[in-house]
Image (cartoon, rainbow, N blue to C red; front, side, top):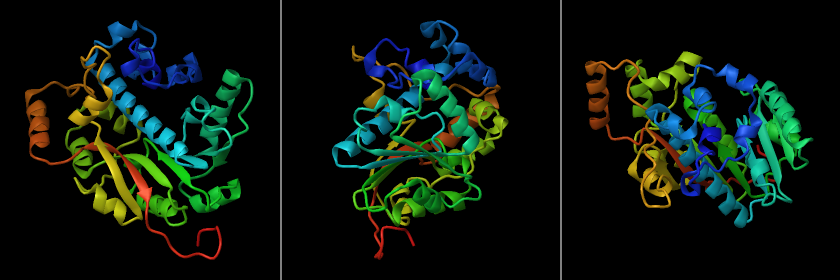
Length: 319
């Protein structure tokens, strides 16, 4: 989706991940051949954007990518010395912002199998692996994140920027809360986290309407939404785990459209909604509309959080 959005001619609404398309090959596209973005990447850009599903998903990733990129650059300007990308997958920020990250330490944390696959692609694209990135292997089900980071050389007394993108909604609540604790409790003053998340109503919506098109690329592929933050209570929730909510943006809301989806000529490229239910029956359509109208929620959002709760410790290691 980032690769497709990076083809947009208007820089104002172009996905800034210019590396995404170089990181994928026809073999990778075959793995997601059932996804409309795979087909869109082999077709004309403007023709493909006529699909509401393709345009909505591309716009959603544009907003999410731009939001995190902006916070990363701001954090670097404010003296961040380390960047930790949790569940890094094919995240490209360590390479797109190589100049800005000079002298900083980057930790990409993910499963070994995912990282080995990514390393091969990086070598094919760049000729070698970058020196400034530590590929930090973890089994999220069994390993301690704190111990894994410690072994990799993470310094708990240095200001750090954490990225947690496209992960939390697929985890059980206990795993989300444990990760937030691991990030906040030992982190240096001024450290921060950007994460996207579902809210409870968003998770219930996905469960209630199995014909929603989103199910084709989440639940049907073995990754259903599991966790949601209580609706409209993001500030209270993150405070319990040591964070101050600095900014929250509903990814389906008007503010997201206003910030990131306006073309250079002042018109809008569209919305972040990925299309109508895949089975276009009146009952389902009416049910979805009523569900939206009867719940006060951000559904799916992204937030900028600052570590606030500190605890006394005798060394630079977490307890």
